[in-house]
Length: 350
Image (cartoon, rainbow, N blue to C red; front, side, top):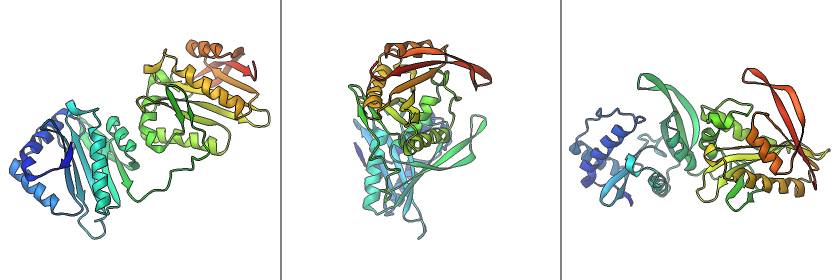
């Protein structure tokens, strides 16, 4: 249950905040550093609740506080339209949707109070939190370099915000073809998917045979999503995000690049989180987009270039009816060495 905190919650809230700071390595305060007493917290709650642009929500599970969210409103005429958010959830209650529920309730309150902007900061290594914030519609505005000192090193923070009156779409998506299979939703990527893309391309297993190094920042993920939009807008390709319909998790990507409209050919590309290897997910996705390639894009030839060492990819293409045409020797220079690429192709109606 999400509810507004009251002064009676002061002692439990102090204990909850201390526990969160003990369990997490990403909070502003180190474990044991906070010295707030229940009496001081009671006064703090009173101060917040008399300000029309500040609020304090708590998540309660079976009579115990599971988490909290502060909204601290701007205290000048020029900043009263915004509020700074701080969220914390006990470790035992993570992955239960409490964070999303706190954000949704706080946003509803903020709209009622006619606030325009919500903002927060998060350390870059806290990818789980960044994933939640981007899912809730927050975007990265910048980086606070060397913002915090954590475990013997300086750590950057992302500055993120959400505009509550910003209803313009990120980019036109009306013509983007969303496809569905039994287990997958194939859709256009949005900036909110940056954390998922960072997880995907941050995996050494995923990028082992790709012409890129593993991602370490959300900026790289946003650039990748920008490339997806660019090739679609220019009609030189199309890239779908593969979303597990059961969980909503982005598990990979697939699509076409080097789309030649004159000669009606395109190159196939794909990648998948290693947790999903060996269970037919990529076969299911590629069968779907191959049909789209033949029927909607009117392709005559679809080809794929893979590292010959990537045996699983070669077997996948063979199962899908592709023929090995040959090997391009020392065709690309990747990660400090020249590599061969095996060329597979399939012709319409084969």
